[in-house]
Length: 449
Image (cartoon, rainbow, N blue to C red; front, side):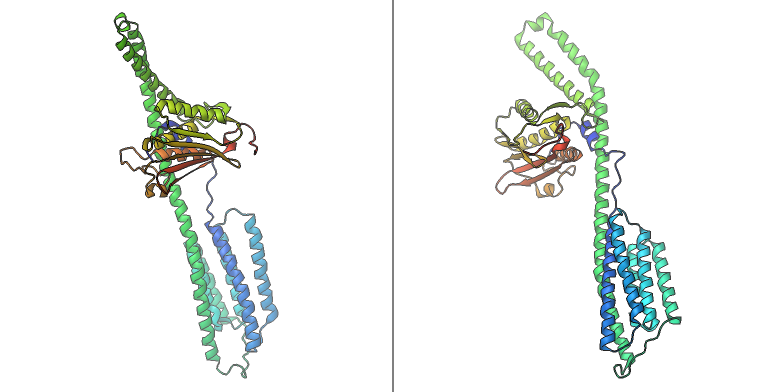
């Protein structure tokens, strides 16, 4: 089974693949994820401050202003709890929200440093953590605002701070203690930077990948729309000459010389049938081009819809080796969708082209999903096609215009709320599965068996 040129009316797929004008824009969740990272970093800061206060107080015997520092820690905890609640009721997080969060962290760090020696505290290097995160997360103007705030905070700490009283019986060399603190602060700063910047970059890469997919999807949609307009225009232009041919052939068949010759009469009958077939194709394109799903559809049942489809397809292709099994169970009333019918026919054609001796078509139910599975015994899909299922011009034959079959099928099924999957068998052959929610087809509420 290979991805080949489609039998699906181009105009129909152009209309189906076109996104609705009023569809809501896709929200960028990257800033939301980054806000979650900042909240996690704040929890780490809370734990780190508690550990540092306990270590300095009980190990070095340094008298710290415990109550004010505990008050700052409680304020950070309250900020984090409030941030969690706030995020639950927000779908979008903007640059301004990230800037406010980072500024609050700078204020909290400045307050702790004010109580523990000011600018002489070796943990002033943690300002660089906030600045670096701001450079990665924020726009240029906000990043410079954060730089200005940290610089002013550092300058203020050189003027206003609460000095620490170091006990000489525990601290014989204050400079060595300061260097040790600088080393601990450097290691902590470096570790947090690597951990959180790496995770932020991962979020940004995911966002860029989504944007690339959206751009590719827009290009594909534009391509299909152009194809639909071209097909619709061609259908209008072909309508008049086909009608003229039909009238002329009908008049010629009434001529005595032609009616008296059986062989010539048979030829004219075949010509008339061919013209009628062309007129039917043109009519399908004109009816389908630009219409939304549901127009031109008719109520039927799932069993009748599939049985009729299989019978028409087998007759038109003279295919006697199609194995059709309806394992759905019940027979719900559905809307006969022209685009869905053409999508199924297109997959059947692709399977029949590479596996004329055996094609299997199975209908199943999985909860509220309709599964349409088509298998063959052909050479299977190329790995490149499977990895980019539904992309245009992914064909193994390399003929001009090829590779649109599964591309159009995927767009039709996605528009109907479903999905398309494909895989190769271990031995020989491949399978394509169309998964559709019953709610898009069934008349009324679908009920489980």
